Amino acid sequence: MVDPTSDLNEDVSEEEAPTCAVCGAALVQDPDHRVVTRVDDGQVETTHFCSDAHREEWAG
Image (cartoon, rainbow, N blue to C red; front, side, top):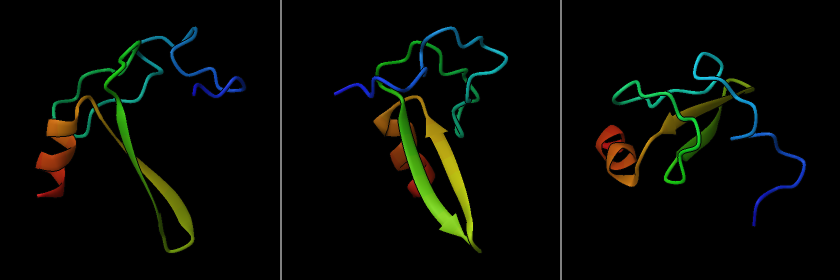
């Protein structure tokens, strides 16, 4: 289900879009986009990936 309150993939330019942590590709209109979210020292950190393969490569 798509979050109806989210503007992800709508009116997001390549300059403003998140980038893949492995290859650096801008994640605009990317249906395979994956995100890892974690809390580190009380701060929320997100890491974006353009595919499951890059997420797995990053995780080691």
